[in-house]
Length: 570
Image 1 (cartoon, rainbow, N blue to C red):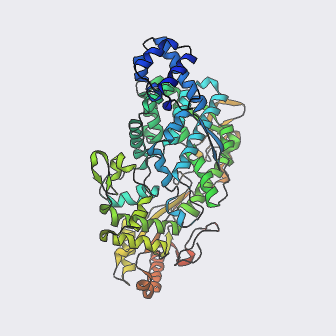
Image 2 (image 1 turned 90 degrees about the horizontal axis):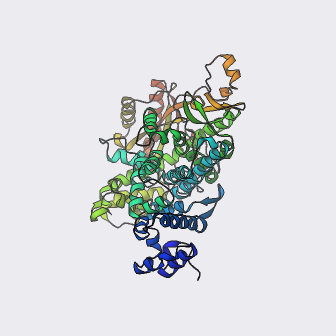
């Protein structure tokens, strides 16, 4: 008899055959009487009630686990990481509606309308992060057996990497950073996709009864699930020590505290989430990636710094890490915050706001939720993807006429008009009064202040105004147990001793700027373009800001990007 590889599809006869093969034939009659099929065999609670002998239960559980690991793992061929082998539990998570939803959420939001190659989605990125999380954890375990990293630890880290983006909404960061703050301007601004990722993770586990599968592979449903969720939505730096040191398993949490630094590193900003999206985004954008994440994994070690265990890199790798932060800066400058990308995302956001209450999504208990409310109900949120844009575009509802017209403007490249860009000579942000004053000055020529949108942004190296390398941890070849930080302000002797090469970084790490977009359609704005741009230039000059106007106010872009109809080549 040839059985299906996946136990859940086994018949009663196939279950009994498996029992005999594993030397547990004496339980065959009991299983027949209870009509145990494959899906019930995977229910550990039911299995324990059926196999009352503790030794036989453990023997059968291990046999089931071994079979699943042998026949139900998968190898995925990925354009970034090559052939990735995935644990059966990861495969089971991937094969849920909550995870499959990520196939329909663009990784780079509106950048796909600028870079035709940026068609990748959160789905493949999440699988890549789960894979890299496992690779880094396995590398540390192999090099440093004294760390006592268990197979369960590795599986927890992989699950956290796999599920870290479950909470993203339509067009990724557009939903949580642009749409939700404007839909709820007076609400708590702290709602982020990481919080929704934890909620969606809980919903996924409950809805798909993943608890039994998790227990099968040795996960503790209390401590390990808590650990996974803390890695998905890490606490702030100030709360991180408390997160690691508290709880019923304090000793165990201290043992694996450095594992919190793998998926989302709140201390150094160096983590596998960035490793994947740098490589994947550069690949699809056609931008060179100078950072070698596999080299980082090869040299990574866990060392003690100030009495705490941290993931450290070899001192000579500081230049490779600089390349990582430089790649981040380049991606923001050339793609994520490209002026046409932000223009289109602004238009999509405006369309979503106009359509918000007219989009109704069925959630738990049959309750209906709007586009902005769906984030509060995971059943409704599971149904919310980028496809909402098509829903608006193809709607015949009169209530969505304005939203539909706005999205049509994107398709016909009738974008908002780019007035100009300004930045300060110091790293401070633009104040609300400054922005309001600018809008009033521009409206002197058009009497339509609300049709000017001022978008405040910044380019940095991931750590605000600070040198990101000064947060990183390093070790020297002959002193593995101890790690240290590099500080450019240390004495010359200390700099030489610690092989400090952080002078390769720029002297300024952050710059704030604003971009002004004009929402009025081309035929209406044409007579006012010159005076509006002159007013913008005069305002910048009066304030002492650095201004670029019109076609020249743009970050560099790789060839192949589409052009806006009002700004020349992008």
